[in-house]
Image 1 (cartoon, rainbow, N blue to C red):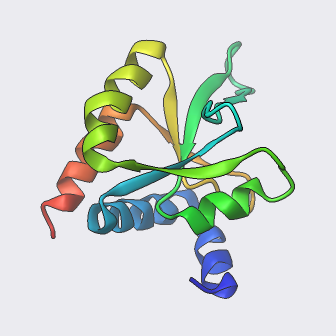
Image 2 (cartoon, rainbow, N blue to C red; image 1 turned 90 degrees about the horizontal axis):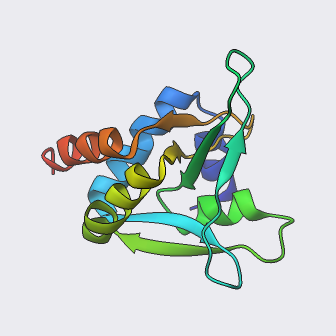
Length: 131
């Protein structure tokens, strides 16, 4: 994907990026995360001004290029692919058990669509039925 295409998609609003993510992942059948040298996945804590507690989430991307763009400037983060069956079978239950949300395709403006892992799974299954 060209840099212009990447920036164009990352410049969309959260809901448009979420829809793009669903269609890309439904087609490619993989989700991308970032891991460090110890193979630990990137987890982000965000503070919510309206609530006393923040939200912890796993950022996910529909392709390695998006994850690489996000990781620019961080020497120790590399994109890692997770097959959709693995994501559904292992990651969704694990994230739910650990109380982690999923941050879908963070944008250039640092906004991110945060959703529960089970809800993302349902939305992806719906999107896959279109293929």
